Structure formats: C-alpha cells, structure tokens
Image 1 (tube, rainbow, N blue to C red):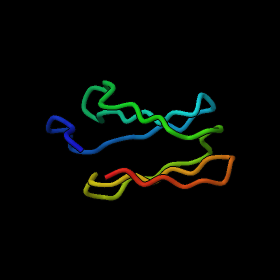
Image 2: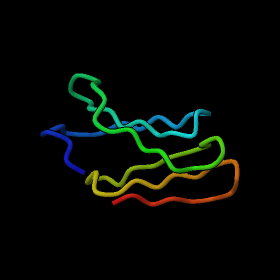
Image 3: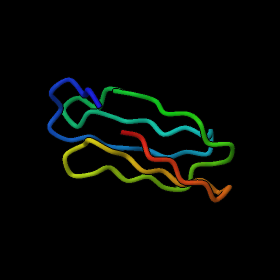
Amino acid sequence: MNHKKATSLLATASYDMKVNIWSDRDFSLVRSLAGHESKVASSDITADSSCIATVSRGETIDIDL
C-alpha cells in the first residue's frame, strides 16, 4: 500500500461493506476497500502496513496486499 509516508495506518471496518484505511499522522483517508457482500466485522493490518485482512459477517475473508 502506498500510504504517503505515514508511520502507521489505522483501519475501520463498517456495516457499509467497506474498510477505510487512515493515516495516523493527520487521520486523512488513504484508501477505501470494497468487495465484501455483507457487513465487515473485523480488520487487521500487518505491522509494516504491507497487508490487510478483513472478515465479513458473510463468513468471507479478504486479504489485500
């Protein structure tokens, strides 16, 4: 992920079937991920911000590199 020199990223999972990735520097939106067919229940980012895993209520798991 190209996150414009952010030291860390934050992810929010939501019921609109998207995950938003935010910069920890200024809390600006870096990227919005869509693709789940039901509500996103959880997300996690690797320590180096190179990969994010998401899981939905529809019991699907997505991994974005």
